[in-house]
Length: 461
Ligand code: SAH
Ligand code: SF4
Ligand code: F3S
Image (tube, rainbow, N blue to C red; front, side):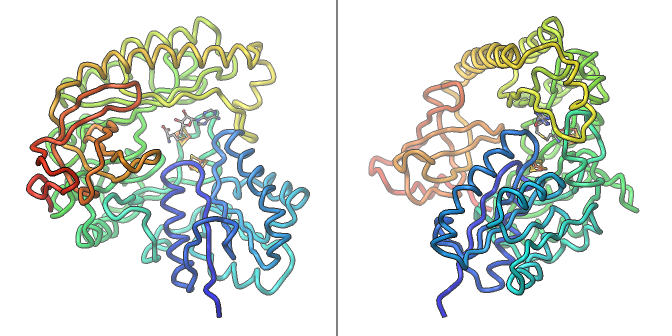
């Protein structure tokens, strides 16, 4: 029998990327192998994101495109998973407009994928298996996974989100906060170290909420300090942290544990206190600025990145300018900026009806914000030219195999001349050029014979 192939589309955040790795692991355990293109696959899964309308539209666009492919290959099975699956409107829409989709399963029961596929085989009806809320994190332990990288690994530490920011769909699609047991996390990290992984990124929508729901008294700081002791792991990252409850203990832990990278992703969302309150973010502009100050004092060389929403319902021009002023004041190393997108079922979506600001003006706000942020990045990045830094080499860049991409501890992207053999290794490089979104660098102590890996430079373990 010919080998069955699978293809997974992954949209959205790192938690979805991690879930896709688990889905791939489950499928490979069932005997499937990865297909390089969806057209060649027997099972296609869309692991979707619901954070903004545009993400949802691109999923339906691609599902539509596969309709013709499936007509040619009728045995092809198509499934939808991830955050959109948790929204009842998606299932309605599939029934009406995408009858070639065979199954839908949600964020809480990815471990049931093999059973769901078995059910799909026995029926020509749409199979829907979506749990309303998340089960015990224990259900997700010991699942197989096919990790995308052999060097950097994602590790879930907390599922769900209880913060209920008024614009955000995540609490509805990912359920209540549920922390994994520290011993389960440490077991996974030790296994990763044993397999040769050098970097771990601890994942959660709110990693600094970690532990509050566990019987033992523990938190993210304790977890970071424990992982610091795992031999073999060199760099530790964590995503995403909420500025609220970003404790002094956590800052100290980052400062004191050399494996924990000095990169702080702290989504601010807005620089205006009225808007922050309407967003239910639990902090003020002043608190945020003070937090940034504290971090910079305690962790020299820290990079600070953020997420910002413009055009939140009711945001005035004056209030938007508070965001611009905050951006100027903080001097972020990078910012992910978005126009507010109404999410059905969230409180802010109702307020949009009374919002006098037209979309055109919001687009223009976004552009002004981006221009400011880009000019800040260009100027500050320039200051790093000439610096010698340690990077973890990822390998050939997406655009050009002659160029290797690498990341600094501060998560800056450095492009280097290709050097086979350096993939997955640490190296010292010098920054030679700064652009808005990346740097160019040269290998240090580069031997004259190009193309040979400088093994002596690669620190391992
Ligand atoms: N848990 C993270 C955010 C995850 S979503 C945190 O609280 O920081 C990633 C980013 O998407 C958010 O920080 C926010 O800037 C943006 N976002 C979320 N909902 C949005 C919406 N309805 N419209 C536009 N952007 C949104
Ligand atoms: Fe969404 Fe807020 Fe939770 Fe982040 S903290 S996932 S923005 S509700
Ligand atoms: Fe998107 Fe769900 Fe992540 S909505 S951002 S995939 S948690």
